[in-house]
Length: 178
Image (cartoon, rainbow, N blue to C red; front, side, top):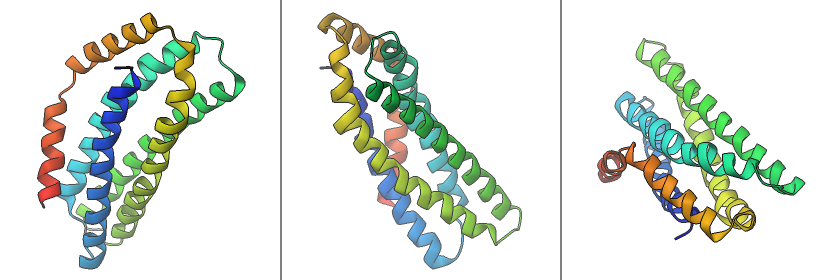
């Protein structure tokens, strides 16, 4: 397996959670109320699994190693855009948390902000994932030797030992079943 393998497997779980977020967002819109418990679970998933676990491997390992390579201007630009997209997602999640807190504290008009931030994330992730899976990962893999790819994959496994994938698979299953 190449390093993009685990990253793409993680993308599939993120896509499942994004689909659940989309469904829950529509329920909240129809019921005209925020489900704060679900928002907390979604935020936890995105912050820990999508950002710290997944983006952590990308930024702390893959992008770090790519930065040492003589990359084309196109690939350098693509990597910088992905880093900026990760920052964008973090900002939207922080805004979602604030909007949820506003709602919980009695500001019912914050429902619109919650729904807007959820919609932004639902729209953002599929295209971000597509760009990584179909363009960036295949295009940049050529910068590495087989030994470097193997070492990176091993570093991914070591990185993951510090994370708790099973917890977040269970979170997705819980919310998937409704």
